[in-house]
Structures are given as C-alpha cells and as structure tokens.
Length: 130
Image 1 (cartoon, helix red, strand yellow):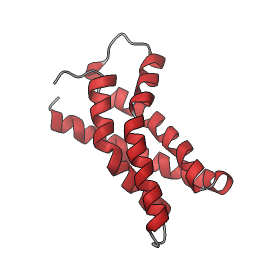
Image 2 (tube, helix red, strand yellow; image 1 turned 120 degrees about the vertical axis):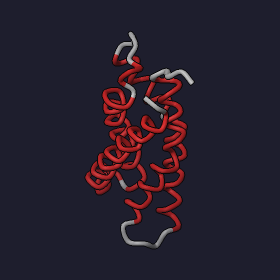
Image 3 (cartoon, helix red, strand yellow; image 1 turned 90 degrees about the vertical axis):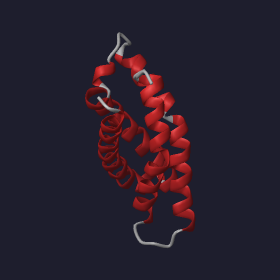
Image 4 (tube, helix red, strand yellow; image 1 turned 60 degrees about the vertical axis):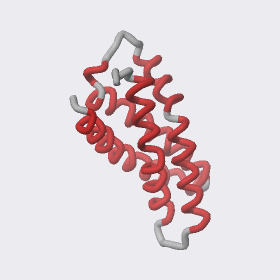
C-alpha cells in the first residue's frame, strides 16, 4: 500500500477515534472533570484506534508479536502524540470562550498528535519499512 493511502486510512481511523474520545469525554466529565476525563477518553480512543489500525491500516505488517505485546507497544508509543494532544486540548479549554470548547479541544488535540502517532505506529509498532 502506498504511504499516502496508508496515512489516509490512519486518518479515517483517527476520525473514529475522535468519536470514541468525545463520547467517553462527555460521558465521564460530570464525574471526573474535564481534565481527568480527557485522560480516560484518550485511553479509550487509543485502544479503539489500535484495534482498527491493526485490522485495517497496517494489516500487511502483521508479525508474530502477541496481541497484548503489540497493544502495549502501541499504547506506549502513543505517549508522544498524547502529550501534544493533551497540551492542545488544555490550551483550548484554558483560552477559548467558544461554546463546545471541549469538543474543539479534542479535535485540536487529535490534529496536534496525529503525525507523531502515525510515525510511531508505522515504524515502532507495526514496523513498516521506509
């Protein structure tokens, strides 16, 4: 699969992850607050995108790694993107006065972390050659 097609699939999976992120965020924010709920929602979204990326985006890169090892590697490799993601989210919450700023923050965070997450998934988790 060409790199552009692969990145497009990764982005489509990311949109699904965005939906999971928002659903979990809004479902748990009343209990945890907007910042702690974001940690939970990101974890849920990353878990969903791992499964979808494993199944659809990087299926040709399947190796003999156990599912749990691959999942753990994916979650750890997403930490760089997660830091960018959370920083953008927190900035929008802090400085935006727009209605729906939590959703806007999640979207901004997703865009901020997307490239870092793609490169991590491609070269560290699913081990695509360059």
